[in-house]
Length: 284
Image 1 (cartoon, rainbow, N blue to C red):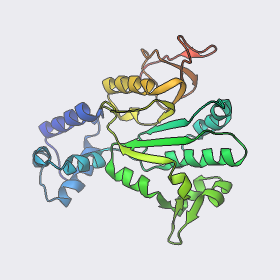
Image 2: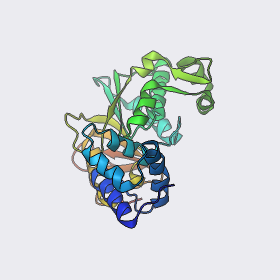
Image 3: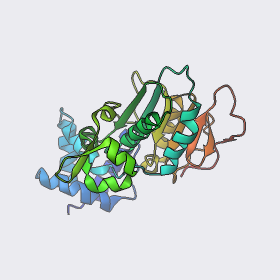
């Protein structure tokens, strides 16, 4: 394993923190292990040399490789199921017949299991007689490698065990090689885009539901506050934000109210929704 000097590690943590909001300050060994694999593959002997080549690389490929190595893309189907239960039981039945669309943003979609869980849930809701307007799901991530997996939508058959039997039969297709994919119409519900959550979003829309789950746990305090404001600004009035169950929003956040653990709502009008409490607590 290639070891970093103290100066190299400080340069790396500063670059990642300033550019992406990610806090690596307590993850030196992890960073060394992951970056060693990348540097050895490219026959680069030190982090200083890698960073120098990255700055000179006009294609952006080395910067993308660094982010792919240093970001964590752990996820699975129906992760934190309480969120999906709330969507099915509380949000969808309240949709107005006047709604022109139902728009969802999965911020930090990783390898796609989250957005495809949503697609299957929405399809099942409609198949069982529930009314839905046209649905659009935007899935974004900073990792190009994770996005490639998500767009391919091909997963090990073992992951089928995470899904209800009815979903497996109706929405999944095994290919005989130990993998399965999703039905084409469900895949078409989702569009993918590379996005750095710390950068302004040009032409970004407003959403009925935003999922940004288990993302902020990797961010520094300033980045969490900034991201929380951007997520709130991306919600329509009355829209919902789902975060990870180990996360809390910054106490100074005033645009959202907590309706359930890890579930927040933007007020439908000036002031907060009746019966809800303002966001409280520190940063998780």
